[in-house]
Image (tube, rainbow, N blue to C red; front, side, top):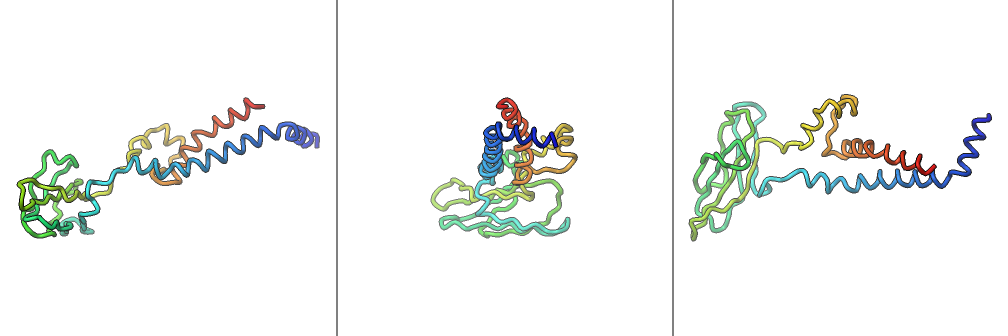
Length: 187
């Protein structure tokens, strides 16, 4: 009974500190969720012109891949380049012609990139229509999450920083001790 009175007396005199601490927790919690879309968009890059190129992958190995793209009004022919790197430094020509869609066998396991170029009729320059990939973009935090320190912090659970739940979990729980320190310092 005595402990209850002591807690009551402390709350009567220290309610301002508890209120400030509660407001800080609320602002940080709500603010982190508001920051998330900007954070995610800054880390995930869409391939250039990806909305103009469509890549349909087979369910099993050895099936056919269909690559199609939007046509350009002044294009006389199209060229498709294939590479295992997005930089297209070692690209090889996969197709040259007038069609806006090609189908070919999937005879590889690794990630591949396909760049579609258009040859314009009045110039000798090629114009990039878009780039497509056989796999989804990588999570930039994947390597960080494999760190034993983060694994122990998350209890071995898989946390994806590109989802709201994972972002709030790591950001909020990395800030709470500072907020608690502010509260204790206020007392």
